[in-house]
Length: 317
Image 1 (cartoon, rainbow, N blue to C red):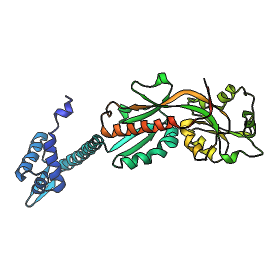
Image 2 (cartoon, rainbow, N blue to C red):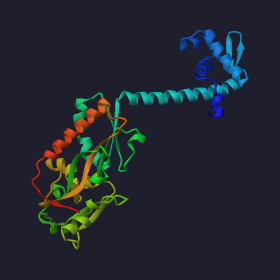
Image 3 (cartoon, rainbow, N blue to C red):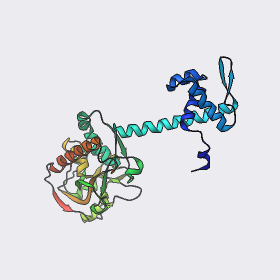
């Protein structure tokens, strides 16, 4: 045991001292702790004997802290407050009232959040915390129950459940396609601004216009301009707002196309080898709220996979 810990008074003694110091009364401290006044007095005396100093100046009908008493009270009050806060956090987490889900920023913004109202209507008693992050976070270390991983099949962790794959296709606002700027053939992209999603780590080449144009054997195409974004949801929002043509992925843009906010004017799209996987923390797998949320996610994914899809597919990469 650490030398400093051996010299500490017991927690029960410190609780009695802290209550007496805060109330400046053994009687009020005893009532707060549901013990007798003499018990609190003995607890304080035990600490004083342990430390070899007086903590209180006992006056007629008054109790005052000495300088040593003030010093110990400040430290004890802070320590007990921190212990209480930690216990409350652990208790709340164990009670299962808050469920934390992590996903990429684009997935959270474009797919998960628009669907959350359905889950909230079913289980309004479960609070959801969305931890949107493009990093692949450690679920156990960061206390996160559920993750959606976007990766190649070989990179999916053990036990991961596939939600759906993806296909890549050009999308834009209906107002972007005009008589002066048609978009019926890939060659028509020369009349449009291309919206590029460029992560700083270069981790998404399959969502690159360079790759798409290479597959189409149109490397020499020169568009009307370019806008570049570091977040995928920003890229898609720019397309919705009519700033140009983006490369959409079917799980994230299908509803926007259905709503008429985006169109997919070209006939072909390209199937990516990547997919979205559901990952559950082993520490949270048996929680009832985690089971309900993951069942709901799988139901939503099943609907996604069954969505009408009439465009021809060509494998990309």
